[in-house]
Length: 295
Ligand SMILES: CC(C)(COP(=O)(O)OP(=O)(O)OC[C@H]1O[C@@H](n2cnc3c(N)ncnc32)[C@H](O)[C@@H]1OP(=O)(O)O)[C@@H](O)C(=O)NCCC(=O)NCCS
Image 1 (tube, protein in one colour):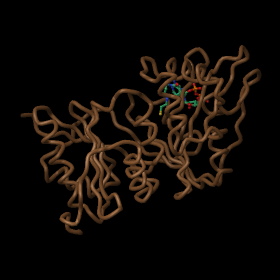
Image 2 (cartoon, helix red, strand yellow):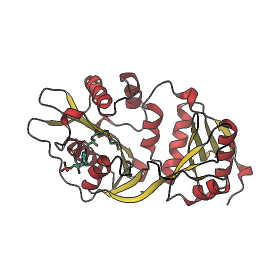
Image 3 (cartoon, helix red, strand yellow):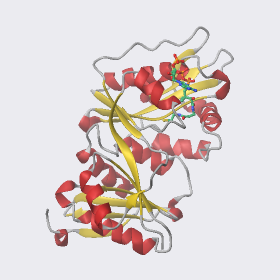
Image 4 (cartoon, helix red, strand yellow):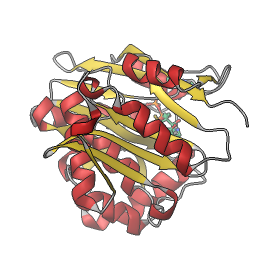
């Protein structure tokens, strides 16, 4: 472990800091890592106006970001910590406790992140028990099926004119949703969004029936699917499968060799994980929700 005294800490001060958080997540990326650069872009920009609910801090050693914490008030923490600076996990948790002192705090990490699990254990966090969880799935893109939209449906990428339809499809798939045309335009302007990795399936009537957005971390040749949806009236026709395969082919053409996705893993919500396993994704980790003791 490297001493945390060499490290400076600062509050989040805008998009340059998101790039710094993404830089750490890219450096730490593996198929079993919780955070891909695309998860951060989507997570921070899919809704607008959330910043006041999201105290965020970065820890830096010189120019290099070595840890970050992102609190979702009132009670949840996201974090990433460079294992070479694992002592900082305790600092992130102390800051979380000071910022959200009067609640039962929760943190979700993957079972592939032992340095975070150890810090959480030392700070008295315990398994939340029988609650929904997520699985981390990975795909070696060398072996990828061809996309095949059903008759009458058309696969294509998203253009500016598609924004209203694309947002309406998302809002129908994830009802109720806080994604708006304004927030989706912010997503499209965020690094590393690429329109060539944002795919829709157009229905015979011209409306957006399904979509899949893939993000590429060029430095790691790694893609992440985030998000996928099909409008309820168009489900179980193979549209999500077709959109995912089209977006994954585009990511492979752009240099991705692997892809990950993190759907629910518990039996109460099986459809997305079945979809991805059917595309060839395989399990590499699962999430664990840990909670502080009740006051
Ligand atoms: C999950 C979702 C995207 C699937 O869309 P879809 O277009 O109906 O999926 P497809 O028709 O391409 O299905 C492909 C495979 O996924 C699985 N699947 C899809 N829906 C399922 C369901 N309701 N129950 C069980 N398995 C399901 C099946 O294995 C299916 O293959 P099959 O039809 O040959 O059995 C859609 O239900 C949805 O938008 N849900 C809400 C948003 C969401 O949860 N997105 C994923 C977040 S990670």
